[in-house]
Length: 64
Image 1 (cartoon, rainbow, N blue to C red):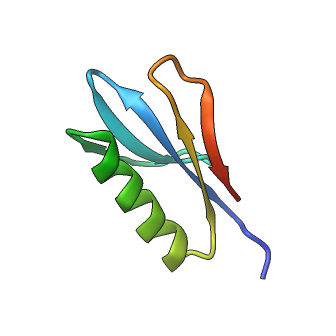
Image 2: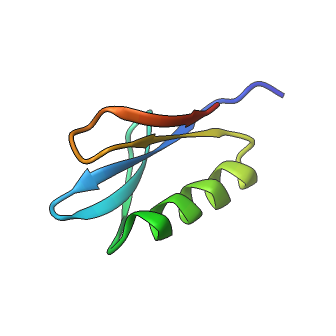
């Protein structure tokens, strides 16, 4: 099955957010590890991948 969306973990106003590449709503978390856990959960449910960004926005981990 082809992956139709990717979940990104990105910095967001001093916290961390999970967002879909295609847009839509975001989920905000106090720490990065919680955001990564949620992104992995969503990716498993949607047969998708995740991309983790660092504080400056650079990609530091990709599993697509």
